[in-house]
Image (tube, rainbow, N blue to C red; front, side):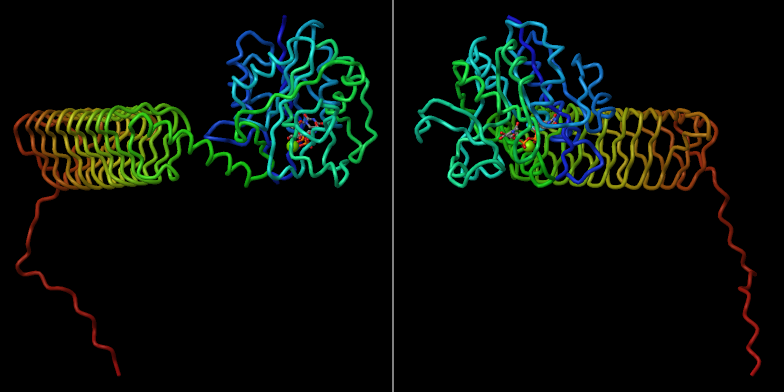
Length: 461
Ligand code: UD1
Ligand code: MG
């Protein structure tokens, strides 16, 4: 029996007050719609159809290559009208169609599966939840007041009587229906209601009239059915998701100083006895080795921090590897291709890009290393930089083992500094230097004994 998954994503999202289509707003660094597609993919073999409309070009571009079929709904005349647009795409009359919302990002695969099972190919299965405040939602009407009664229909908030508005069981916007029946039901919808829209929810009454059983499956938790309609709701969902991620990490032994001040926008793999202080943001794929310590307010993306390394506060790391026992920061910046060996020290206001630093090398203050290969135990002085870019091409700087680079040196690449050499402070080095020697490349200091400082002519009265 074929499963078709329809994701509704054509709505405007007026309350976001944004130029960006609502389903492209980001939760944990990924567009809302991508979260839904990921969960849908967990159901295995299924065709996925996304209904686009508002901002269709942008939405379709964002999910290109993800294997979903996009169907446009222009104009957007309601959720029932949206499903009417995909009717020609629903090929298997005997199959099941699962309807999801592009703006309800945290729906769990297990819940979707339960919905599909409840449908079983011959029943209409609705995902419902009981809320303390049901304002705005479609209410589940049942025979008798109790929740045990048979489902008779859904009434939208705007169409509900004051009595119906007291019902707290609501439709979450997700359902699974027998495909053949769904097709016929949606084509029979009208728009005689408070909003003049074609309500998908009106098919419930049709099912009841035709003696098709309607079942309500309860969501596991509130978070997985929460929709995003406003910046506030988006932020609320973000905190809920981050809290879950923080708790999962803490259960695995990671010590977060405060699970409420932690953000993971990708994946984080952490060893034993890892400590993370407040306000850190992790993006992409980050690995933290055993006993790694991350100070407050660091932003770390696509990086490997090896065992025992310490990242001091306010450090920015992107596309880099930090070796075991290395010390980085505070206020350091590691850019793509920075590879720090064991026990390397990178201090405040030091920027490293596309450079390898071998074991024990140090750049402790105010420095730049770009396109450089730095040997073991090198000491790279304050204010020194590699001039790696000639305006058109990047060139490499090679610094041998045990080199001492004085303060404020300018290494004009391509250039090689021989092992054990010392560069005098303030040198501009544009030619290779020999091993083991002191190289100074700056104007000699002179003192002029007879020199007189100019004096101002006295002002005339
Ligand atoms: C809908 C349900 C309501 C339920 C609520 C849960 C209907 C009539 N009502 O109401 O019972 O409690 O969701 O959140 O279905 N969309 C389109 N095309 C349209 C209109 C909407 O693709 O023409 C999409 C939206 O982008 C959104 C989803 O459908 O993803 C729901 O639309 P929305 O306008 O938010 O419906 P609600 O009024 O919230
Ligand atoms: Mg809504």
